[in-house]
Image (tube, rainbow, N blue to C red; front, side, top):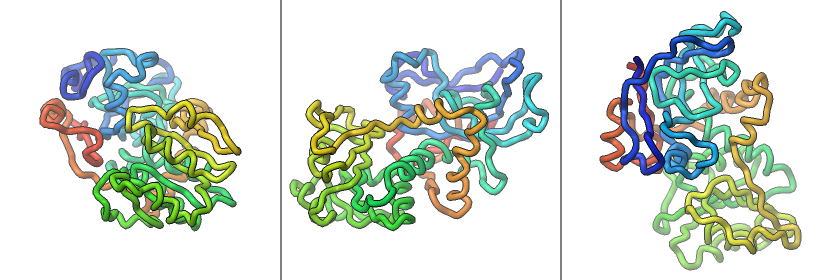
Length: 327
């Protein structure tokens, strides 16, 4: 038997997640491996999935967790012998909130020896999203960029990567006016949407010339008000929906070249050939080795304590949470 956190049905984490013994894998497929997980992450994507938001592709009961790191301890007949003992990110589907995870070997991304388990654990969702977004949407002549949810980890990563390209973004946040980013992210300006004049502040911070790119994970009324601020030909990239409210239909209608594009990390990861996954992650690992894209862990929780932590109010938006999965 192996210990795992299980969401029995769709719903809030505090109501549906329990920790139980799971049957051990008796036989492995030719290309499968068993990964002994050492740590996993709690992400908003985990909370959204457990809520049932992706009902068409989510089956319950479910072991949540899209992000985590572990060591390959058993391998199927056709898996290269060198895989045994390798430290990897097992990606492609949920399942990291357990001690032993069975996964197809091509979904395992090797983690460089230079990175510790915590750095490896948080090397997927936020850093890879930030790298892909900046690569796709910051080429010249892009100069004026707005990033929503500036308090989030991924927004800090975006600001850091944009600055490397000489672009200092305007960050929007929901905290009280005057909030400063303790991560010292290189923002041009930080604007609170709690201030009734926030739209005017964004226009002033971007020189009144219009915004080239908005990187938005909020949607809702904030996104709707940002679309008209785009210059002709500008783009709002919607890569999340933290508000739970979609953009209004009028925002999705292109006008003077202003348009909305959707970005889903899953689409990229599931589209590239499996053999290309290490190359996809290579820029992330290079940034981490250089001290960039680091995630500051605010709390560590043992796997067995996870249900109690959820009932006590632990949520994915409470900062970076590392789940210690090793027995």
